[in-house]
Length: 148
Image 1 (cartoon, rainbow, N blue to C red):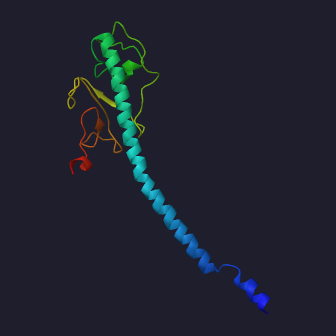
Image 2: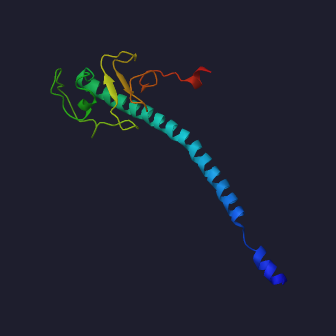
Image 3: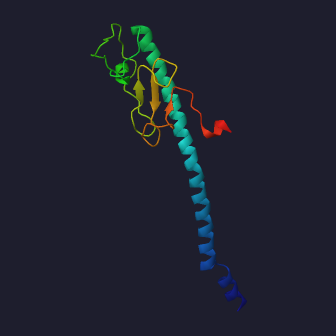
């Protein structure tokens, strides 16, 4: 009779299995929730890096043509020779294609600048896709973490 009791006690009960699965689910869910914040930060960092890279290409364009692209010409001027005035005399293709921000939207470009001390504004509209205070751009951005 003791061998039968051992076989019966060797397995897990349904309650124990449900409890273990519930604990694992809570841990995995918490981990995913924690990682989502890191994904948002990574997208912001990528946008900032893209803006710096685009800014470098705009500087090259300006050094060759004595003026940055106009707002009308936009960032497309780095990919295709502009046909609107001022038509650049020493144009060269600086990029294969215009980059999109991490949220799949076009980077915004304005010349002359409204917010930046540079000659142009270059920015991403961010995750909300609307021009607002949370845009990521070529001007010094202050966030709530930097303010205290």
